[in-house]
Image (cartoon, rainbow, N blue to C red):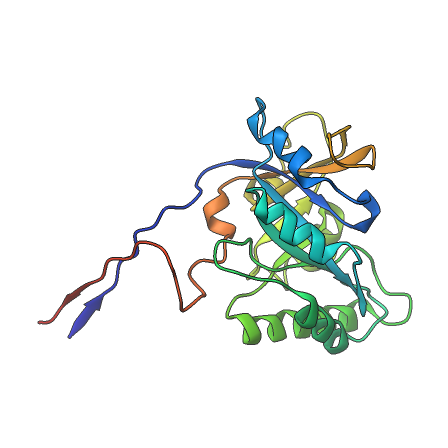
Length: 232
């Protein structure tokens, strides 16, 4: 017996421009930010800090709810603190995270080496966090990091994870790592977005937005689905 299952659904596809925010960007007025979806380079997605170490971002619940209500594709990221316990960090992320079908996959943000443990131990902790995330949600998180951190320390051990890479430039980056990353954070200086109190915001390009969405790991897909079963 061969069972073929096909999914057909309305979903976002192709390249997309987005931003990432945290409590440091202030009390965001999302209906005003929504105006940017009607510009030449519309903001299609927003990735929001949910937590850092064992701390919860104080603006996370509001940012997630209101960004979604105003039509943005949303995602959530955990800032991984390299000197803190990985299991405790994941438990905090899990307790904080909002994740629904159509959201961007969970993200773990690793930017720094540890001052209290070796790089090998840090990578073991990060792998533990990723494994716990996969066990809980059925997917590996996207890994966000700087280009140098990825190429110098992480790429050989975490090639099984999607990459969101920070590599800043006003010109198109040609490095294979940047070209192959699912998301490229290309600047920290998107200026004066109406509705965001902080003057500067990070800017991000997703090369194919559908590839980073939390569709296929969910069991309940409330979209148009058709199934074909053939029995031989």
